[in-house]
Length: 393
Image (cartoon, rainbow, N blue to C red):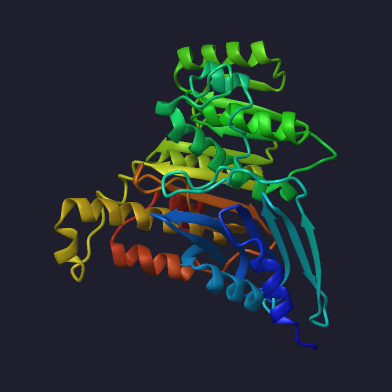
């Protein structure tokens, strides 16, 4: 295999490593094990511009902050045998790198001709200005929901909600290849509430991306359902409808492509996940909430000194619960990741479970059983999938 010219590659990349950078995405790994993708974005800390790399490894995301010179070396090293593709976007232009099987990179650089007068700088509290839903462009549902003014400006007190919506759409952007372009995609949103994210999904997938979709929003509050249906009709969103319904008992469809469950309380998340798996959903996006079940059961003599602290016990129980949910989904044939939904400074309930259906099921039942025994606890999701199998044995 030929050696890549690291100096030439670093020079092409280094030209765009400044405050004008929007993002770098490094993909197409050479090996199945290890990192599957790396995303890099600028991050300003005081007067210093750093570059935050997010490494996706298996079910986890790891972050590191790099200086300009470190970032150039980091990217070139990744393209020297670990990854085959890189896409860099900047206000100053774009760089595309595609490494051949022989290890030779094809480098395409396109510079923006017009003079740049202001940098789209990313700060500590506002990391990414290049949002999917653009500030300055009025979006009807954001206006009616009080997030945006009629002129397209973000209401200051609702900026966190605007960032959260865009962060959620980034997760959907990553799974677009799993949706169908040649037929209608059915999406269920359990516990949709005021439906900020439900409307955002419809707007992004149908209005912006042109997918044929049908979205069903479910919630237990009839007043919320009535209001959301009124808004949907006023926007002409013909395939977005809301219904009064319970997660566990809903039987309105036979086939679903994507299931979304955001802040479904405690075991309601488990029933939603089980429902999604039985429907054979290609994608599951879940933000769990109020994980009380394991907290009431968890008991371990070795961990007793740690578990005596109520706050620690509560947080450990929540983390164990979501990690076990992810492993159970892996057992059912999903590639599962646990990702940060929004910054920890805004809420500790910031975990998103993203599961994508695959052909192979993970043979991890023994490990799951051992962890359950170690914690002296049980989960509803475990029972929903394994209790019947255990009784048969």
